Image (cartoon, rainbow, N blue to C red; front, top):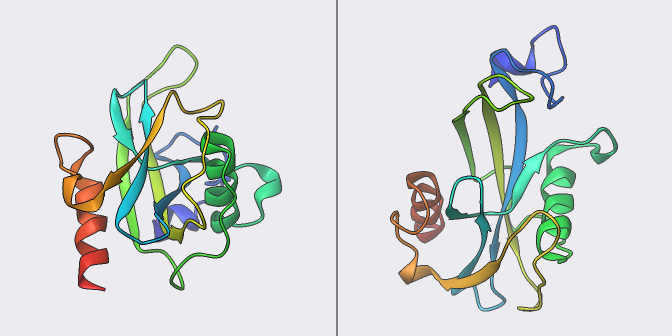
Length: 154
């Protein structure tokens, strides 16, 4: 990620494909911190955290994560629960008709929801609050389990 950040191109642009570009995502905990909000990612057929590409107007990666939450579940979240990112993840994106294969360099933040009120937005087919004890790798993926392990450790 440090090498990507120092790249001569714009590693925050979704058109930066070699090796890829930065994205940001949000792990949103319920008001009692007992559940995690997951959205259904129809391209991957998995329940994942909200997140996505950086837009020019975002300003920073926290703003990207906040905007993505608003777009995907129509929820506003405040500042992250902890300073800095809780996790970083690099994952492969296969080629599609309009873009070559590349990697997403995802910077992840934790937020605390003020309420359970949410509505699936334009970028999410569905969402649900999953009790943390019921989040499994079969439901999501190993990178989410890694973040939950970090949350359990405090």
